[in-house]
Image 1 (cartoon, one colour):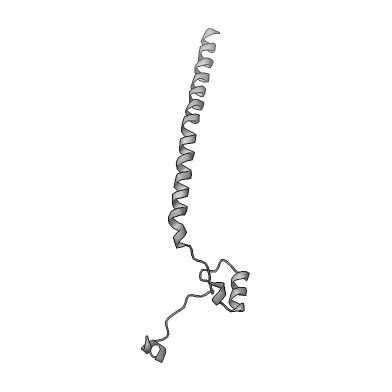
Image 2 (cartoon, rainbow, N blue to C red):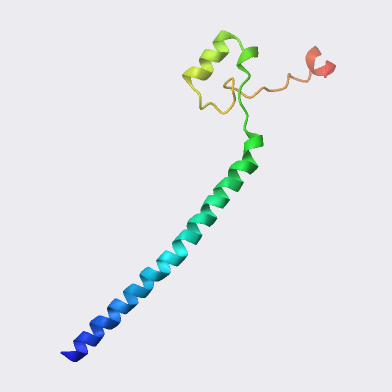
Length: 91
């Protein structure tokens, strides 16, 4: 009976030590995670782009409002004109 009591106490001591370690480690880890998230937001915020709604037509604005997750603000990536056109030769 005494042997079982010692085994149970040893198991409880291990669990208690693990919980104590959690209270030491988790706040430090959370603090580092918050610092990293803040740094990332600060680093990437200058690269955010927003469409200039003042220079868009009503159709373009409606297209953005209908489907805001398009890869390009107007739904297509502009392509250069074919090489044999006057616009290509001018550029």
